[in-house]
Length: 256
Image 1 (tube, rainbow, N blue to C red):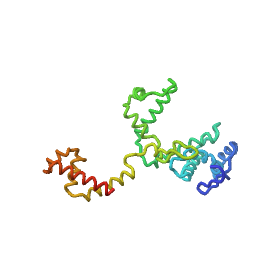
Image 2: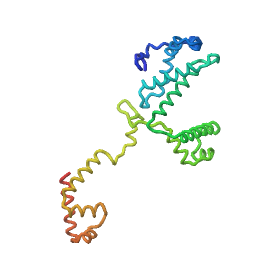
Image 3: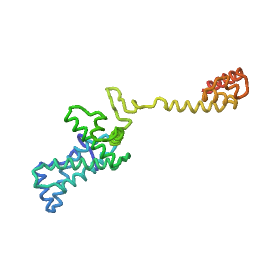
Image 4: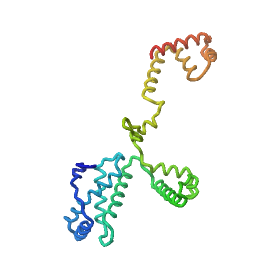
């Protein structure tokens, strides 16, 4: 987002940046009810919001929406910051902005994850981090299950539930000519548009056959019966079955 980028009607290239001492002075005035100082403080920290929302780009959300939500986090940080602590405002404000955006993404996700699954996933992540710090390697699924006294299935389900969904058009590799997307790796080679059209054409061709020819194809190719079994079932000779079958297949090829 370099140069002139408008978010919510704001030209981000012209956003003011406040120094730490300026922010503290404005915070003290805002605490005393100075609304002008509060508004100046908000305007002077919009670049902070901008820097945070860039970390959430590419998740399918409009940047305008993320910017507005980030501003809510900024306002909450301004209203709750303790000016008497020896802490930079940005140190307090960034986690507040990130938390507000994460809450928005969670609450507006099309995939709803239960609280119990989120809690389980959080415990798994904590246990995984502690294990890595102690053993300098990632724990196996069995080791995590033993540490947390959980079933392997519960751990896998919880971790899958909290994973961020990925767009099928997300590029996973790119060179100077073309990009390979997720869709290229998970594409169903069987149920393609071409196969679907072939299926329609085949059904249409079969519907144009006579009733006995359709019955023979059903018994031969869908039920897997031999020509002798078909002849016994429909009451004609094996030679007749063979002749009708060949004629039916010839007609289908002609239709295609």
